[in-house]
Image (tube, rainbow, N blue to C red; front, side):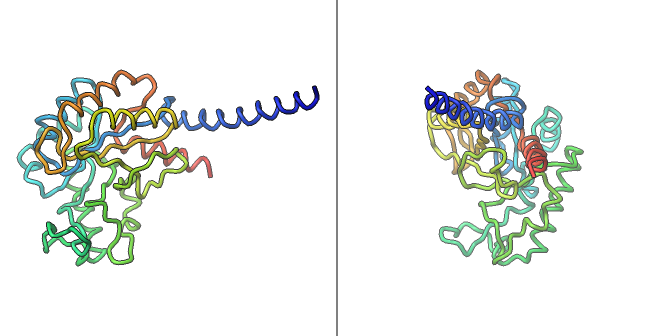
Length: 269
């Protein structure tokens, strides 16, 4: 009997530690099981024609990563301002979306905006100029950054090191479901969506719910508008699933989630 009692005590102790960890992680997700962030890159017409009407109809908030030089910024300036007023985040996707043209498969890179030819100072300066533009649109001081093409470095230098105080965090392009303590705010994991089904995306959400982790979606075109695209109906099904699960999933812009994670990690030190 003594052995049985000791075994039961050990099981209870391990279970207590396990569920305590989940409970602590739940706290950072606004009291819910997990967090889901919907991000949309490049500032394209589809953001207004398809995405925002779908989000607004369900009262969901997204993060739109803005290329400052995009013609859609100038053409639809008032719409961007109203979108920010409704709670959507206008994130920074650099002024000219420079990508490293020296990498394989990068023939599309404009030689004038080849990140491999940039100095770190030029990259930092252009990103800060884009912040100034975005502040003029939405009046906000805090936002997040998204790496164009997922490129983190110029040569051997991580250029975001000089920008950490300018942003709440930076979204990358590598997939992963991480707890609040595991998230790297200088390279936040994200799942790039290009043609995957609604079932695939909803399954990712279910995995995040089960593991109490952060899930970030990275979209470009939605129902067209970009060569990287997701079907409009698949996107709609994902949004409706999230809305149905709103009591257990925290759906928020990247800046809100990043600031909550930062606070959690600081307290955990």
